[in-house]
Structures are given as C-alpha cells and as structure tokens.
Amino acid sequence: MAQDRATSEDRQQETRRDEVDDETISDVIRDIVEKNDPYDERVVCYAQPIFDTHTESYRQAEVLMRLKIGNEIVGPNRFIPMAEKNGSIFRLTYILLNKVCSAMKELSKKCDFDRITVNFPPVFFCNEDMLKNLCNIMKMHGTDTNKLGVELTEQALEDRDDVKNRVSSMTNAGIKLYLDDFGTGYSSMARIVTYPFSVIKIDKGLLDTAMKYQCMEELISIIIRVLKKNGYEILMEGVEDENGKKFSMDTKVDYIQGFLYERPVPLEKLENYFAPATT
Ligand code: C2E
Ligand code: CA
Ligand code: CA
Image 1 (tube, rainbow, N blue to C red):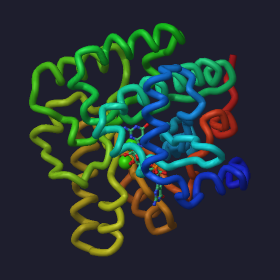
Image 2: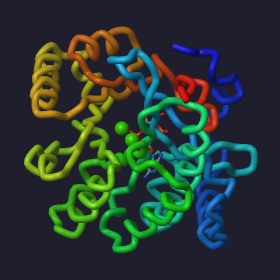
Image 3: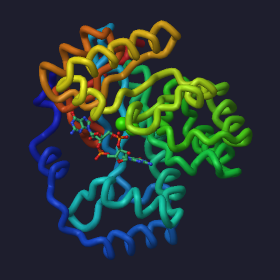
C-alpha cells in the first residue's frame, strides 16, 4: 500500500468540493464538443490502481474521467449523466481513449502491466461508428489490444444482435470485457452469460451488504464461487477497510480495488505503481 505515491495535491484535487455550477459544466462540455480537439486539456484522466491478489502487486488500473474547469477538477458524477443525456459522452469518451492509448504507449516502454480499463457508456455499442473510431484510435497509437479492457454495466447489455456483434468483434480483437457494478441492477445472469465477459466487478454496495448481514455474506460467497468455477475472474470494488479485505481474500477474488489500497491518481502517475519493464 503505497500511500506516498499520490501527492497531497492529488488528494486535495480528488476530494475538492463542487464549486462549479451545472450551467458552467454544460457550457464547457459544449465547447469541448465544438472544438473537437482529441487532446483537449479539460478532459482529465485519473486512474485507480487495482491490486492483483495472486501476484500481490498492481498490474491493472481503471481510468476514471474528470473535467478540469479553471483550477477545479470536477468529478464524473457531476457531468457524466449530463453528457449521456445530450450525447456528448461520445466525444468525451473518444478524447479519453485517445489520451489513454497515448499514455499506454509510454507506459509500456517503462512498465510491466497487464491491462488498463476504460468505462464505456451504455449507449456506446448501439452506435454504428464506434468500432471504426475505436480501431482508428488504437491504430494511431499502436495500442496492444490485449492491454486494453472495457467496462460495461448491465444497462448496456441490450438483447440486440448488432450490439452483441460489436462487443464480440472487440473481444475477438483481444480487448477484455469487464462487467461493472455487478449486483446493482437486476443482475440477470441469463443476459450476462450471453456476453463474453472475462472479469466480473462486484459492486461496493454488494460488499457493504455482505459486511452487514450474515446471510448476504454467505450468498455472495456462493455467487463468487460459482462465477469463478465457470471461468470468470472476480474483482471486488470499493474495499475500504480490513473487513472488506478479509472477505475478499477469504472468497479468493482475483483483484481488489478500493481506497484501502489506492485512490485514483492522475494517469501519468501510474508508472509509480507498476513494476519496471523487464527488457
Ligand atoms: P465506477 O465505474 O464504478 O468507478 C469506480 C468509482 O468508485 C470511482 O469513482 C472510484 O473513485 C470509486 N471508488 C473506488 N474505490 C472506492 C472505495 O473504496 N470507496 C468508495 N466510496 N469509492 C471508491 P469516480 O471516479 O467518482 O467515478 C464514479 C462513476 O462515474 C464511475 O463509477 C463511472 O460510473 C462513472 N465514470 C467515471 N469515469 C468514467 C468514464 O470515463 N466514462 C464513463 N462513461 N463513466 C465514467
Ligand atoms: Ca467502472
Ligand atoms: Ca464499478
């Protein structure tokens, strides 16, 4: 647990109170879309290192978007719902992908890591152009598809052939699919199993319930065991304390992500968490 790796400035920015109003956020997003700059500095990538319980080291991270408005870093809960509603989430995601693929190229030269994941909005796979755009960005940066992961929530799991085909094309190319926030929706296993997920991310809410009620602890342990037996890797999200860590270890999850380990840091700081590259 490398608490010294994030500076106090990172933490301050990360926890800063909302001071920018919704109208300003909306204006900034509109301007980002209009300018169409793939390196727009207002789209900021943070990343949270993910602990690998097998190697006991950090080999993955999840990229989390923020907006830089003036001197403030605005968290995703303020602007993602807005951007999803007016469609600007597409542009924001392409900018984020461009920056992530660019950063991964540098990171690969210096570090030994398995994967960086990005969050795709539920509507993403309904769009005809997304695969072409994604491929163009990866090609431009020479991205190793095996090192990219895509996180989808259950909301994205449409029972539509075109959506499933795009998802399959992506995973066939080597990109790994992560089911985000497992346990927050209806968790329709019937639908989940029709998608090529590699990793299931157990939502913090489910972990918190397990920590409160014995019967939920037993139930979630069984769910994890069944998922693992069927070839899924399990990631426990939102581990904040020793109880959450113990439960994660007892249930033999593959990965742990949470404030007990590391908070999100600016993307360029990931090299401080991964082991140096062996050439
Ligand atoms: P998420 O995808 O479930 O991301 C994990 C969130 O949990 C992050 O919040 C992270 O900082 C937080 N977290 C991690 N460990 C802990 C913990 O131990 N305790 C607690 N209380 N929280 C923890 P963040 O960065 O504020 O993101 C919130 C949500 O915004 C994300 O939830 C995701 O739904 C959305 N989001 C973030 N970045 C993007 C993006 O690039 N694209 C899209 N479409 N959505 C994004
Ligand atoms: Ca996520
Ligand atoms: Ca999540």
